[in-house]
Length: 305
View 1 (tube, helix red, strand yellow):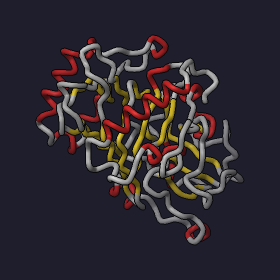
View 2 (cartoon, one colour):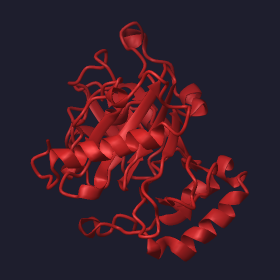
View 3 (cartoon, helix red, strand yellow):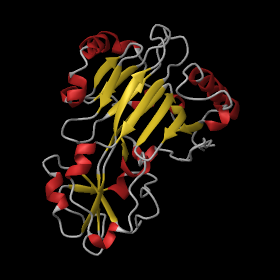
View 4 (cartoon, one colour):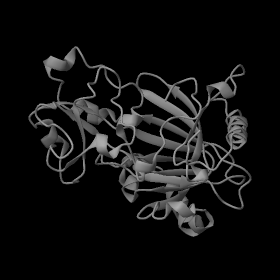
């Protein structure tokens, strides 16, 4: 149990059971023989009770699919990580110009799997004028861990429980979202109704600069920018008019065209490195309040982490 949480064990159990009942309404998640044992329970910002999160995770080598239930998903983005030989760049302040040390930014940072040396230097682009190509050409570059793009789907009846997603406005410039004509109306709903959704008191500034979007059942929102830069997003499912919680489906994968365009791995590492499988959240997730983040699940699901 997180030490800074004010919730009791029975609060978490009740939330987990409620989430299980909601996820069971959708056949893409649990089968008839699965129950609460397959769900993961986390509390991302334990001092903020509304940020507890129940997750059903489905994963294969390339794609991760999640069913998510939470009152409030904290603001975060997914950032590409560039890996360098620590003999060339030792980390912290000794990093390529225009980048930031990922180990210092991400609380609970982990390489994507055991084949990636934890002593290497892992950096993210901080200066948006710094290009991928320039980092790929830097001395000591080993490989890049691409950040995933996500596609959100509103699963349940929006008239019973609605969700207001707050997202980087650049997401609407991505071709996937530009081709979804219903998003114009979803953005209009967000502009008209965002004030009806609660932002917890301790999360001041969490939605600053983001655009509110309210999806109807079956509608989708692609969480990605066309320039592959981090796409900030969060959401509130806290509305006095809602009847319980909603289910948001997240289907995520790394962008194939970015993976294809990056240079081949140096032969020195080619036989050593195992590519990240499905999702590398503890490597690429950059939360707005990362120093307060509690990454350790309170309860593991059928897929750990």
